[in-house]
Image (tube, rainbow, N blue to C red; front, side, top):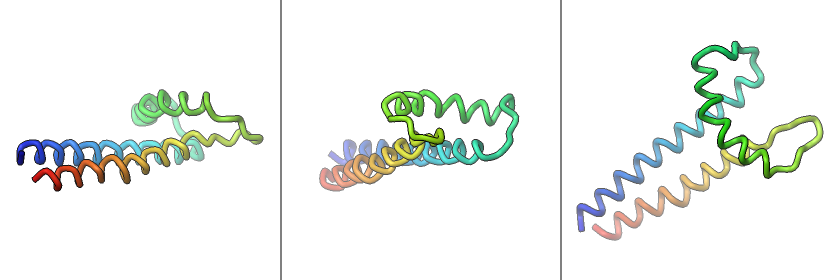
Length: 99
């Protein structure tokens, strides 16, 4: 059983790192919208390429707010925080209960 517990801990840690990294990429996307940047810069293209598929899906389901304020990064950030609080913590607790 300790192998399964170790596997769950490893999965939880990797998921934790990936979700935090994606949260920081979303935050970087928000910051670069307020700064004049070169859209052809490789880092800017990477940020847009990794965030746009998720933000586009959320944006399609959200109502448009006057003034063009985009709520999709906030919604995605909250979803990531929920996954960090619920899913990752649950995996750690399940691994602890198994071992």
